Length: 350
Ligand code: KG4
Ligand code: ZN
Image (cartoon, rainbow, N blue to C red; front, side, top):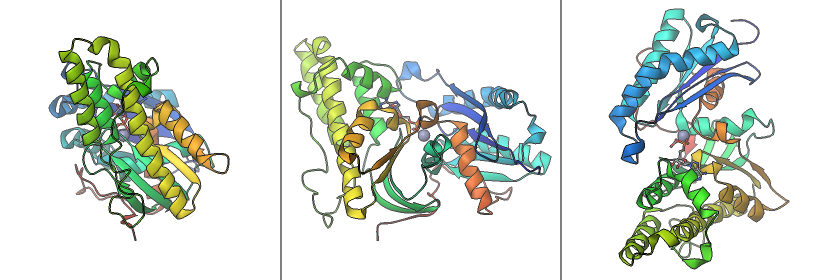
């Protein structure tokens, strides 16, 4: 290994085939994200198609990242890959690829937890984005609120009891006839609508106001989604859905953002930690960023990454792999992918 170890990060847990090369001082030397389009007509990710598309593209994506970094595969010192959670067929493509490369070159491979990787994204652009912080991790499959006391030392505060935040955006978008992924489409449409025209429920907010209430930090998005879908149905029956779509999108977004921001602020107030990190695909949402920023005020610090690092990518995987590598966590070649991988270092609320 040279003085500057090189890390490769590969991400194939869902519908992005992504690879990045990271230098030892966290400089992104190559960065490629290929979003699969085979799912568009289905309005959601089809696991079997995702795995097949990863298999077709993984070589090209890694090669392009190496080319950008002006290095060869044999120059990579440490191989990181998302090992879970995610779609098992999709994960296996990445894990098998990385294990084969690491084995062939006699280098270590590091299995990375997808949501821990999301935690590292802001630190790739801002050296201050280090624990301690309250992290709201919101993606298509997960909604987690945690207190990161140090890298690798995380206390779980809350999680979703049903749908993930991104899943709610995607399902509402699908019902409104918008494309997939739904989050960006909802955001765009919401900008043309008036949120006050409709009022949707804020699940787990009003009746969980004191810390001893079960669900004080937890989320639920399925009731909100159903309320929106039922309203859309009624408007469709009346033949006025087209005129109301933007207002519906805006009212839904306000309700979802309200719950996410409120729970995050509960964590800030209870822990006294005024440093907040937003991570995962939904953290790209500008209404969410603005709402948390405004509630946190001047006394707090808010961290989030630019969209290319907030959405699924290989750089965050390489960065998380680097952390785990430095902890000495090198995997053997019997380890593999796991659809329900446990979040490393995460302990339940004390
Ligand atoms: O982290 P990510 O790229 O993949 C997963 O790990 O799931 O997150 C994807 C999710 C999707 O549900 C997508 O609709 C949502 O992030 N998303 C957004 C926005 N951009 C992406 N949700 C709300 N507003 C956005 N601007
Ligand atoms: Zn993700």
